[in-house]
Length: 255
Image 1 (cartoon, rainbow, N blue to C red):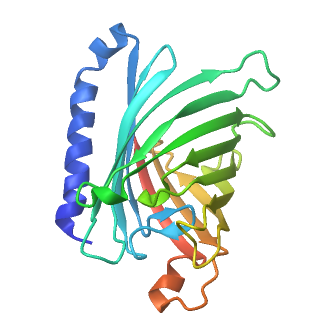
Image 2 (image 1 turned 90 degrees about the horizontal axis):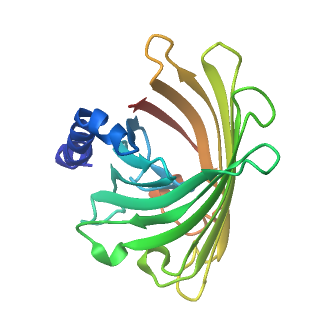
């Protein structure tokens, strides 16, 4: 991981964020709102699999939303897949979100398209459709249940059909500032074009604790165990570490 790559991620996304915040009043008049975040993590894990060879990552993203429910944005991180390229991931996305007020619990429906972009290795680029249902205050005050399903016909740029389903839960521990997070996902792929060490599917998971600073409520620290059940037979030591359960620490600043 090169410092220049980290700096580029922050420069591209943070400069855009600064400009957008400066125009906050003008945006509000147009029914627009801006939000974003910047994070440092000890290991960028995507659905249980490391994207940085178990090295740290610097990440940032922003979203521009309209009062109609439409939104779009950009997210970025440094990456390391073990070769000379790529070192940078930049993901534009666009979607629509709305509250389903006529349903019990008034869940939020969120649908859109996420594009995984690698500027120095465009053959790896691919797009994914997603649909989410978010239930807030589902079991207790302040908690959230997230369910989502994703589909692509070009997983990892391999022209392979793939489905992913996911269930996540987050809950605050009273007014302590601490909270808990848990997540389980299932991914399946067309094995004729892509596989996970010879298998066409795998399960990933995450379980951890969070802490939100009372003095700076926009800053959250998270320590989580993240991993998968991908078969590690025949993998190198680095390959095994990249899919086995490991501790990941992340510090996030929202704005």
